[in-house]
Each structure stands twice: as structure tokens, then as C-alpha cells.
Length: 138
Image (tube, rainbow, N blue to C red):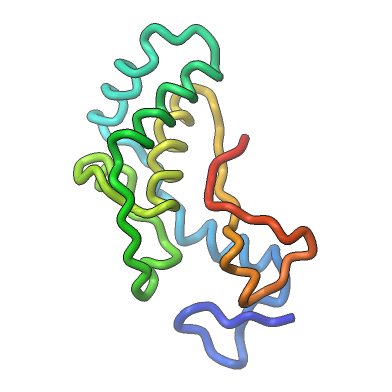
């Protein structure tokens, strides 16, 4: 199986899931860096939380309530998340942006989340498990 990433050529594509994962990791590198504003918000959201699960729920709830979903899948933007400080400042983003912001906030609270791929890839590259989601799981 070979899948050609955006901007790729017929001579170079994903030959394995590892290849695709490395490509996605490169696109997301540095995007979960937190700003002082994010640190302050995470501290306020989790001040009364006593367990990692409560902290994660508080941060996820904020993202679900306060970050408007806007999905403009144009060019590399369909694959690369925006930087967490930008998502936080503008209060909008698509699913990978929300996952980026949540994982940026929770990572600083000792809950490490990572990306996974969504089902839409199935049209391009079948997954034997058949399930994907841009979300976090640590």
C-alpha cells in the first residue's frame, strides 16, 4: 500500500502506518507548546480538581464549551493543527485543533495525550482495525 501525502509525488508516499505517523508527528511538532495564557487558564480550570481525571474533564469541558468548531480543510490545514496559543486566543478550530489545545493543557498537568488518525483516512488508506479519531488518549 502506498498513499501520497499532499504535495507528494507518485514516487514517494506512505509505505506503512509508521511512515504516516512520522509525517503527522512532524506536522504537529511544536503545536502543543503552551502560552502563559493557557497555563493560567489551565490552573484556574483545575484549581479544585483533585484527580487527573477531574483535571482532564475540566479542560475538555472548557474546550467543548468555549472553542467553536470551524473546519476549513484547505491544503496543509486539513492535516496540520494550528498552534495551541492561536486556537486559545481565537477560540475556534477544527477537531485536530481542539485535540491540540486539550492535549497542550493536560500535558502540563501530567496527563499526556497523543493524536490518532480519523476514519476519513479509510477512503485513502484502509486500516485493518477500521477505527480512527483525532482525539487524545494517554
